[in-house]
Image (tube, rainbow, N blue to C red; front, top):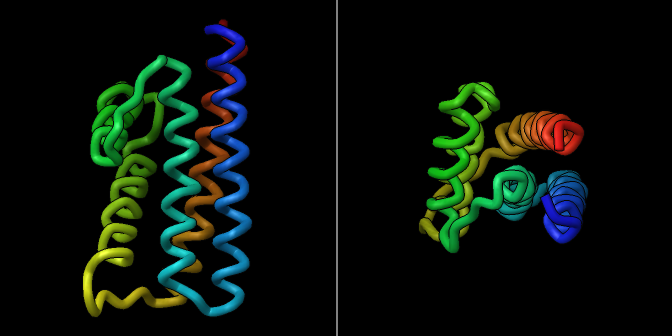
Length: 134
């Protein structure tokens, strides 16, 4: 892995951390829709960082989800439940951002926040193991 790849991985994980902080601020203000967006992006940036370890990517969010599932969930690197969670927040973010009358419950958003914190921590640990092996 090149120094550029390592730098990009670190940058993307930093973005994941920022999105988590943003989500917390939005949740505390009662903005469930906006928090849902930031919850998804926290996971998304972490997944992008993980894909970078194998120099994988896509120009579409659905492509990122598919590549993540194929290369990390189906291979057992990432637990199936974590893969399902990422797929679920992907769908929820789409509905929250684009579907009329879609309601995001604040309690559900707070639960997703806790889960995305765990998800990003899991991905960070996997990335660290991969980097240690190289």
